[in-house]
Length: 67
Picture 1 (spheres, helix red, strand yellow):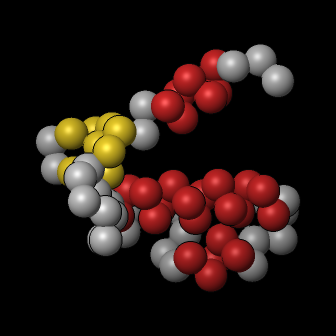
Picture 2 (spheres, helix red, strand yellow; picture 1 turned 90 degrees about the vertical axis):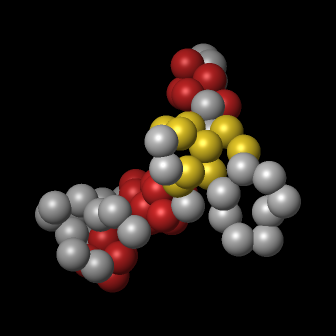
């Protein structure tokens, strides 16, 4: 699991006093996603128990969508 140089363990994020829970969830979800990245395919993920790798490009679209 690739982690930020500021945090050595997921619990460092969980116990960070200045982050809101949503920020903590986002960081931890990003780490979990990165742990299942397909080598050489930045947007592809292949978690266990999934038949085929899938793209996470939809997240970029979500970020661009006005709320």
